[in-house]
Length: 236
Ligand SMILES: Nc1ncnc2c1ncn2[C@@H]1O[C@H](COP(=O)(O)OP(=O)(O)OP(=O)(O)O)[C@@H](O)[C@H]1O
Image 1: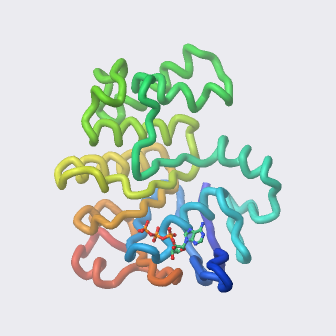
Image 2 (image 1 turned 180 degrees about the vertical axis):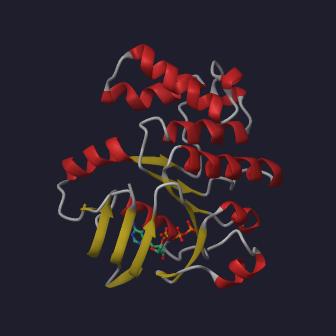
Image 3 (image 1 turned 135 degrees about the vertical axis):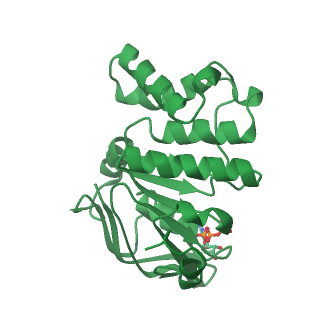
């Protein structure tokens, strides 16, 4: 299922004024593609994820999932779509300290239901996909930063989302661990046919992206040319 944002505008109240966080933003991400969003602090990257993730309604423009317009939905309908179609991976892995890795994933399907044995099997498969088959019993404080981030990615995929929205997955990681996390995100995007949007400040790992866009003052510039030139073949 594709994600499509078309002429999206978002403003926040800023004292007397309104601050334009997203200024006529258009973006299409197809299933199996991983699109990177780069740009300076405060340029609107997280706002883009929030609108795409149906967490904040846009002031104007279209947000479509699989061709279906999401802009007129009620809050309850948006919550239902989030649970069924969207996966999130946040900057801090936001894992619950008292739960093991496999339990973090099971939490996601706790509300949505399904047979417990099937859910457990899916959780274990996803942990294996991110290289953590033998760490499923560990709690967050027993895992490295990179491992926690990979649990978070596996958790983001637990509800079998069509769209995965990822905010700074490598910000807390060193170069090698960051590279491995990004490579795994790219691979899962392909093998599971997810449309992934990854906000990152980490330009060294952009070779994993199918396309890279730069956000500046709320404006999204398609196919960041400097990166495309620096990484021939990896950007289209
Ligand atoms: N709830 C809010 N109310 C008012 N202004 C906000 C709100 N959230 C964000 N902003 C402002 O909107 C602009 C875009 O913020 P956003 O968080 O989307 O940027 P960003 O590119 O993700 O930044 P960073 O890289 O620092 O996380 C910023 O100027 C920010 O101060």
